Image (cartoon, helix red, strand yellow):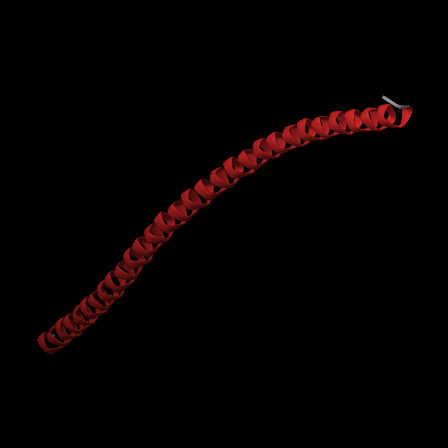
Length: 108
């Protein structure tokens, strides 16, 4: 074996070792990236679930607000009816008082 063959074998051996090291390093990087991807997917799922929960709570709050608005409108209508009834009763009372006072004047 000549010096040239020995030198070429040494270079090939070094290159094989470098390829194996590169493969190991690449494998580790791929594993680390898979872990990071899994973490990001987990964080995304948590955020999605929080979003759905918030949307659900908002829907419940909106529905509750609609119910309260309907109750408020119903009460406003009832109050208006009662005020009209009170006004009618006051008018009747005042008309009755006038009739009574006119009767008293006629009797005197």
